[in-house]
Image 1 (spheres, rainbow, N blue to C red):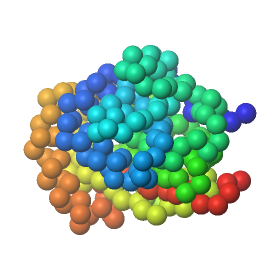
Image 2 (cartoon, helix red, strand yellow; image 1 turned 90 degrees about the vertical axis):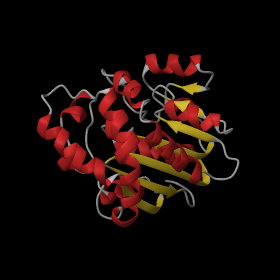
Image 3 (tube, rainbow, N blue to C red; image 1 turned 30 degrees about the vertical axis):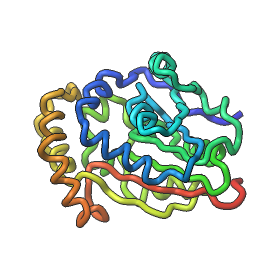
Image 4 (cartoon, helix red, strand yellow; image 1 turned 120 degrees about the vertical axis):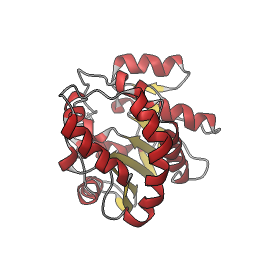
Length: 237
């Protein structure tokens, strides 16, 4: 029996709904998902949440299936017309050419086992795009509220993929301004871990576009998030 990602007592729907207002950030991530996919491939959103990115990818004319272990979020995804798996056990070996996972692996206690599931589900030469929060120094009230186990560095995210038998071809940090904004949030947070619509809207509209420009120079070194692109090569053990 393959080990599936665990369920969580906190679903994170409130923060996910607030993040719907981060339109430029969401568009950037959707662009990244589509940029790294393989041709006209079978795609799985690994940890789809309420379907924010599955919907945006589908709106670009690309079909997506969803894996989501939270029962309430599964219902939301099904209401939006997605094919939904509530466990990776229900997905056969070598079913997908491309898997994307956005801000999910930090929620999974055994992230290496989860990445091994991605490797199992991938077809030969398939790709996994993984995007997660970066830098343990930024771990704070919001991380605790939404039950993050960790934040990653380029090295630690690479290690997870390599432990799963995947070949990592790229890692980089994203959103340098967000790194410093997170430090400020942690210093002034009163312990709730809540995020609010207006600051998210303002950051998304005025700061995130500038941050993305600066990222071209700083992405090897620093950022609020980090991503990896990993390929399945040969036969997985």
